[in-house]
Image (cartoon, rainbow, N blue to C red; front, side):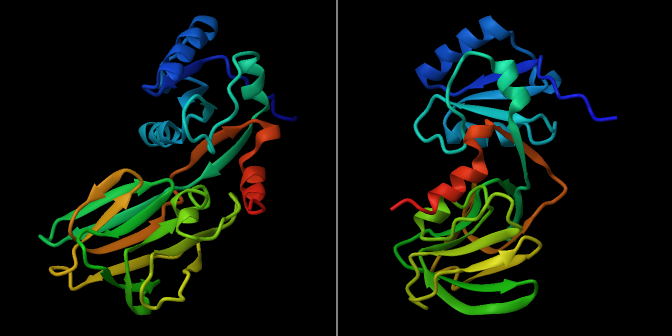
Amino acid sequence: MPESPKTYEKIAFVASEHADAESAAKRLIKRYGNSEPGDADAIVALGGDGLMLQTLHTHMSNHTPIYGMHCGSVGFLMNEYNEDGLHERLAAAKVNVIHPLRMQATGMDGTSHEALAINEVSLFRASYQAAKLKISVDGKMRMEELICDGVLVSTPAGSTAYNLSAYGPILPINAQLLALTPISPFRPRRWRGALLPNEAKVHMEVLEAEKRPVNAVADHTEFRNVLQVEVEEDPSINLHMMFDSDHALDERILAEQFLY
């Protein structure tokens, strides 16, 4: 027998600190009620892309699908704001499953750090001097020395964010790929990065770390003065993002490639 369509009767609302988002939350809670996120059928995030990422991180372990409505500045990951027919919109929404990146970093003092990233893991120079990095993929050295402001590893979901600003490629949301993109490369000047299979493990070693310190960032979690960083997708974590069928994320990512 075919499965019954999913219903979303219990909704949890979260809002950014923006005044418009907070007032929208009050109106929606009065109209639809407000469940605890752990008991909800769906979480509705009211704000911009920053809130969407924060909500995905906060509720990463409870597998509750998250539906964003735009009440902020940047809203690429959000649906259009509309207070009507929310139960029906949730039931008709398309769900995209994404997997975060897991970053493991070693500091200059020998300490180990771990963090998850939904958009990207980035390495940045932390002084006036350019960073020097050595890059290996799946245990094979691919670049002896990259002199740059930094480098990032992006998921498809994050490929239209900082990765795109660094002239990295836009990846379809369901592509089994990661983007490895340099940030202001000096040598080799013409290298524009690489597309990697999503199973790849990327190892980045900081050369001359005392002279040229580097920080590592997984979305909004930063570790200073790192010696080496490993990045790989964590397929054991499923994040469920909901989009209106006429405003689907895969269509918006495709359309983004034709903007000029």
